[in-house]
Length: 281
Figure 1 (cartoon, rainbow, N blue to C red):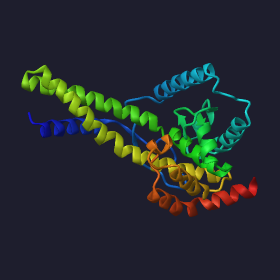
Figure 2 (figure 1 turned 90 degrees about the horizontal axis):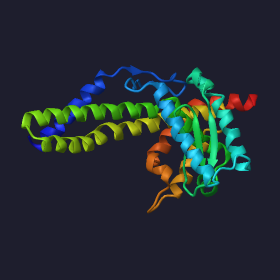
Figure 3 (figure 1 turned 90 degrees about the vertical axis):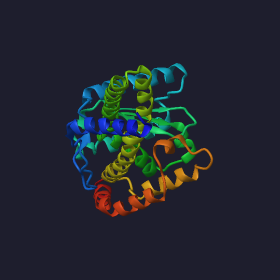
Figure 4 (figure 1 turned 45 degrees about the vertical axis):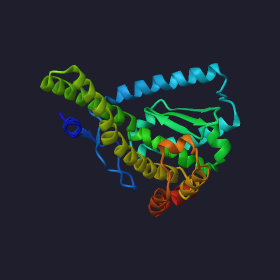
């Protein structure tokens, strides 16, 4: 069977499995209007949160072992204060998130990075603080973006897609092995399908996930009385750190002019929320 036909079969199998998955709206749409329904049915919310919590605890243990955590530092207090204000607003998008076991830590690292795992496990690297030197508003933009990934269950969505890919490849390998009576052909199908599925399933949705996190994060920071315009200046600072070796943060958070343009277009929608929050602060 030709390579092109193998690729087509892999794509059809993955698409068929994905179409068969139940879809859900993980959050309320908010003022920013995030309404995409997601394929998350193959992984439970509890499973995603459990695996994220285990990974987070392992990170904390390793960091403590290497003396990279300092919960009493001024930086950590600052990060946690900003996080608290943002977390207080998550009920707008999903009320259950207010009851999550939120954890916020800062780790010593030269990497310009931050993340929020499923269930509200936040980590900020000192490289982000030391090299970008964000204002509180700009730091709120980073953290609001990362919190939004957790609210939208993007980790769970990726896990579900990984299972679709896995099931599709197993089915494809079996089909090729039977039709050609060759285990070698089946193995080749697995290798080819793995590459195809990564391109066809993971990459397109990662862009969508980033857009959603930008949008929801912008509303979260506005509701928490952080100036939404700081989201634009943040990405300007991030871009300035680019060059031959861009920050790790940008490897998974593509930052370009079109992204900043999108944020600028959305800011007028959330500015009334900011003004209201600022007035009542």
